[in-house]
Each structure stands twice: as C-alpha cells, then as structure tokens.
Length: 293
Ligand code: BG6
Image 1 (cartoon, rainbow, N blue to C red):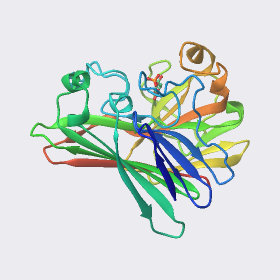
Image 2 (cartoon, helix red, strand yellow):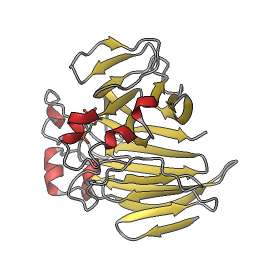
Image 3 (cartoon, rainbow, N blue to C red):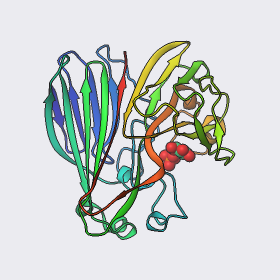
Image 4 (cartoon, rainbow, N blue to C red):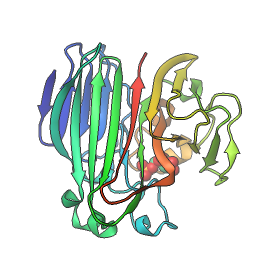
C-alpha cells in the first residue's frame, strides 16, 4: 500500500491499483478509483479545495446538523450541514485490514479543541470525531464515531453525503427504498410513501427516506438495469436521495459543468430524521460500505 500525505491530502493506493484520496479539509473523500483507474465519485470541476468552502462532490461529512435546524436551539446557529465539512481534520495514520482481500484503513480526527473559534462559539460542546476510510479491492467504507467528551449532553445528526458518478441520470434507478416513508424536501411534504417501484429521476429530487427494510438491507444504484453500487449501512437509519437538476445546479456557483447533474446522484446514508442524544462519555457509531460488486 502506497500512502502519500502532502499536508493537505492523503492518498492510498492498493497493490492491485485501487485508490482513494482524502482532503484534510472536511476529511472529504475526493476520489475513489477502481483497479482500472475508473473514478467512482463525482467531483465538481468548480469545487473549492482550498478550504474556503465545503467541497462540492466526493463524500462531504455532515455533522452535527443535517441541513439547518431553526427549531433545534442547540444547533440553530450552525451553517447548513454543520461544521465538520468545513473544518481541517488531523490525519491519525493508517493500518492494514485483514480478510480475504487486503485493504487499507485511514483514520482522521476532529475534536472541539481543533475547531476554529467561530465554530466553537456556535456549538460549545466537547466532542471527539473519529472518521475511518477503508479501501478494499471492491469496496469503500466510511465510518464515523462521535464521542461526548464533555459534561453536558448534546444532540447531533450525521450523514455521509456521497456523490456517485453515473453516466446518465435518466437511466439511473435506486433500489431498496420501495414502500418506504420519506420527507420530500422539494415540495415540503413530510409523509409521503415510495411506491413499490425503484426511485427514478426526471426532475429535481431531494428526499429523506427512512427505508422500511432497515440499515442492513442494501440500497442499490443501477444504470440501464445494471447494478453499479451497493450501499450497506450500519446504524444509519436514513437515506437521502438528491439530484439538483437544471435550475438548482445553475444556482450553485461551485457546480461545474452546469449540466454535471446528469453525471451524479447523491445517495446519502445518515441519521438525520431524529437526533442522537449523547450523554457524558457516550459514543455513537455510524458507517456505510459501498460495494462495486
Ligand atoms: C442534500 C440536501 O443532502 O444536500 C439538499 O438534502 C441540499 O437539500 C444538498 O441542497 C446540498 O447541500 P449543500 O449545502 O452542499 O449545497
């Protein structure tokens, strides 16, 4: 396993050729390639990678609030999707993983002590985050452990905001959300139910599903009927499905090319429809594994 750490990003390459690249800003996974060098994630050509804005693409990490929560006093002042994706994380090191196919695990940390003053004032709790990115020949796992290191309890949400690269959104389906309740953020209606059909895309889509079948049941992204990605969740009850389509993409300065919405779909594993309450010393762990086969 080759690791390079140039102080702003960490790259790991397996002997079989697969690679992953993580920006310390946000601990954002920027790239995941298979052995043939094919990129699996979508990253905007206009994404800011210099720490001035959350990265548009890859896998931004949402914590401690999903979206904004004006009615949740403790997080009401935070920017959209919280501060984890806008903070500089520390690279804690790598370890190799055992099993049938060898891989590499990269660990990243963020704690209240490393936050900038502005973020600390908006959310004054003592916490520790440990984020592990594990690359194996046919999968990528991202796992977050949140620990309450202070005396005050706090409530949080988290989400792995994965931008999957697709060839044509019109031929994409998302399976595994059939008959599941969802909140439609496009029209604001909270209690819709997905039909027994897969999710397809023909306009702006922004939905928070709580899949009826539970986290262990995979959510599968297909293209022209062929399975491309299989997402298995651990302790993350919700799945957000997002595509901005024409107008929302046009409105995002960092979204390039402007028709890039045809080439991406966000399927985001998270704990966002309620709050995780952590008492002093408590920890919450949530993870996803994305399989290519
Ligand atoms: C999704 C939300 O998770 O993220 C959308 O459901 C939001 O409502 C999208 O537009 C992108 O958010 P941001 O802050 O990265 O532009």
